Amino acid sequence: MKKLSLFFAICAVLATGYFIVLQVTDPAPFSFTDVWLVAGVCLMLVSFSIQQHNYHLSKLQKKISGTVLLLLCAVVAVNLFQILTPAVSSGSERTDYLIILGGGLRTDGSPGKIPQRRLQRAAEYLITHRDTKVIVTGGKGRFLPAAEAPVLAHRLEELGVTGDRILQENRALDTIQNLSFSAECMARDANLSLAEILERPVTILTSRYHLARAERIAALEGYKKVYGIAADIPMYLIPNAYGRETGATLKLELRRFFTGKPAGLDDRTSE
Image 1: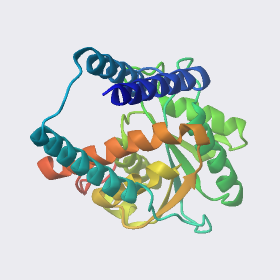
Image 2: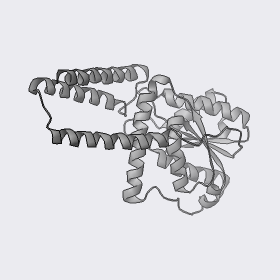
Image 3: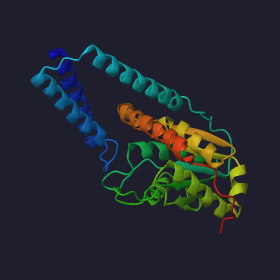
Image 4: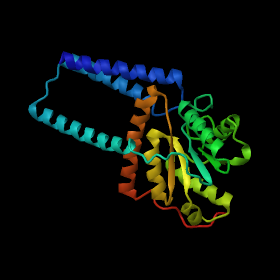
């Protein structure tokens, strides 16, 4: 049991250390990042508990634990397969609108490293697609210092995109709302109904780890043709990003199972 206790202790140190790295390099208000600290504390408590009580699992307990672990691994594997296999566009297609999905702000109100990469990729895309308008989407979450859309719009202008090409959607608090509110924004700008705007092709830009879920949500909401553009992320953020996305993908499927949502957007004319 000493080896098991040591294993949990090492995992606790790694999780806590990773949390510190994330906070130092890309500090954000309350977010998935904090899961690493919680995991570190819990793992250390398990390590101490094993050391103090010298637990021994019965054969039945081992079977139950093994089965639960196997099922958990299977769920994670299925989710990761979905996450790792988005439909990525070359970026050569021309559409009237590009939707940039927000990725969170730092505690000082500036874009974090992930949205910075998305904005840089968007600026590159918009240079070669001069007739395309861009929608920056993201509202003010409970723990965010400001609404995300205006911050992203300002940064895009700094990257050379003129303000007359930028539409701001500043209400959305998650990916489902990002896409539903962006559809309304496009419909208003084009003076079309939601049904008409959803028939038109659109380009969605987000991080690669997020793209598959974004495309699935877009399809569920009624977007008929979506081209997905993937932005990269710093290597050290991969565990945090894919860990969060695994949970978010599972949450989406559970929501679909229990509520049937998200579903198609209402067929109504935008005002």
